[in-house]
Amino acid sequence: ELEAKHIVIATGSKPAALPGVELDGSRIGTSTAALAYTEVPGHLAVIGAGYIGLELGSVWHRLGAKVTVLEYLDRVLPGMDADLAKEAHKFLKRQGLEFRLKSRVIAARVEKGRCVVECEGAEPLQCDRVLLAVGRVPNTEGLALESVGIDTDKQGRIPVDERFATSAAGIYAIGDVVRGPMLAHKAEDEGIACVEGLVNGCGHVNYDAIPAVVYTQPEIASVGKTEEELREGGIEYRKGVFWFRGNARARTLGHIDGKVKVL
Figure 1 (cartoon, rainbow, N blue to C red):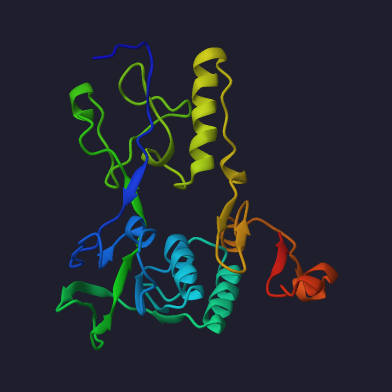
Figure 2 (figure 1 turned 180 degrees about the vertical axis):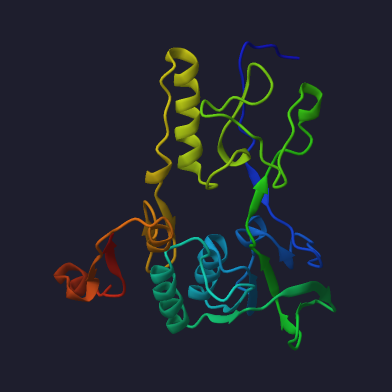
């Protein structure tokens, strides 16, 4: 048993589950299983067109797998600037990934050594492996938070104030267990800001300047507000776009897909 004046909860997150999807950790699994396949799947079905699904789906596609991405929404990369997400969808589709948007997965199971994925209103999809990548959830179960008077919200997150303090005196929380994007560098900054606040009262994180990267080919990176967020907030802005195909270095490297967009 340990005692301390200050305790910081930083237990991270875990892959989110989906009703009807029977995970077995091998044929049907999360990103952890997808990093440990012993051979390239003949056909990989990816449930979810977010960061993790597109990253791992594109990796296995480049290694030779047929990849089918099933997404509930009518677009890929929810939360990303819609213009960039549209370009990413186009490039990945051109590379050979198959996308089935507006597909609501209702079940996934293993039958006779093959995976079967059922989508509402569509024929069942048969494949060799299934990657479930529908997001992540805070890893707050089993911490006995209720024993110290801490209640989580509907998403399992721990409510904190601007100094990362919870409702229990002396207990703080950072990273994936609190509000905001589930990114390692965001958690690191919060950890620093939390401790700085305890020491000198001056910890701060600028949540409007947290970068995000999708490690596909080409990579997709962003920082700051999206064009949709600016419009919704009634903020006036100007937009500048430069396509890589007009850049000499991009042309000499043979990587002319993509653009830079500044708002």
